[in-house]
Length: 279
Image (cartoon, rainbow, N blue to C red):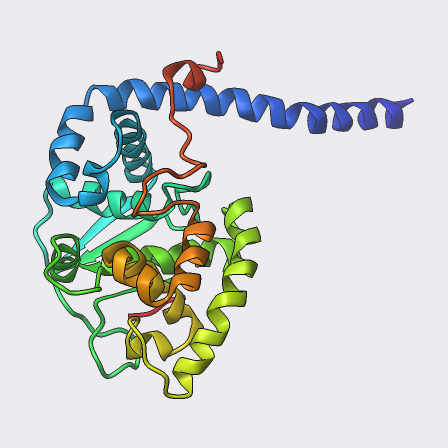
């Protein structure tokens, strides 16, 4: 009899676990949204100043973007190394992550609790050349000087924020598998069918818009593709049309059109339940 009771309790817990989790998550998200609304204008003033991507969105999409930025920031611990912290830093870094994942359901990169912001180029491990950023099991690292140059368009086809967030997105989906996005993982196979031959040709000496660094290894090919996809989409689509379409599909968004089918606008009724690193 005791075995039956215990088995029933275990079964009940298993059956109720997901519904209870969903309810609590909705309540938590609703509370987050209420706190976010009080700061929405402040977030807008910062993000709109630096992100052309954000300024091209509809008003509803902008609210979704800012709320995701707020949620991402709240889920991280930001550390500042030899650089003076200010209120803009965590918001802008969070916004870079949100831009990359805007077409995906999973966007918090939850494996990474810590983001380290350094003043400028730095040395990492046994590598002789300086790094602008990297991702490893301890966190996401970014040099602030290079990050700002990237989001203000001072470095052609180079955006260290998008680059490192691209590494982080692959890391949580394929290495730690701690925040797997179903669409991203499924579509990445199709992306690789297009990307691998281009990468192989580059390693054999072929050259294209992505540049030499993309031929370093496949992880870097992916991260550089992310950068150029957002920073130079017109030329990307013109010179590498198949790869561009594969990128648009795997990220479920197109920076040339801003009409992603996955861009679900967050409404208050929904929130309340009513309705590897490298340089």
